[in-house]
Length: 91
Image (cartoon, rainbow, N blue to C red; front, side):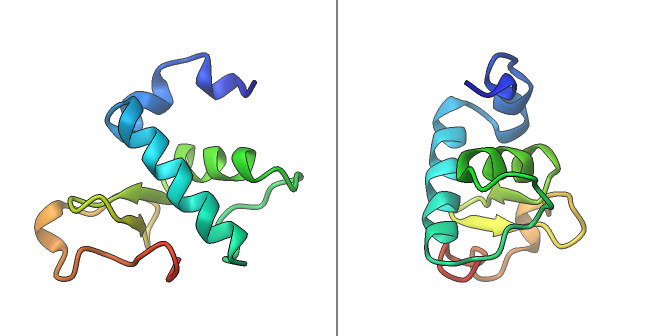
């Protein structure tokens, strides 16, 4: 099990366990569809890559529950979204 799941920091960062689960699932689908990882990771383990992306603030769920990529590493405010952000396929 990944060490990040032993602490609640990742849960708080995403906004709850349900949102964390949703974000992980959506990002793993994108990676399985050949999306490029947003972090340099010494592993091919997709779960480890996704957790690292979350912890580094590279991905998040927007207000519509869609997977979004932070351009500067931090989530944008909800009122900055016009279209709900990219879908998992776009990421």
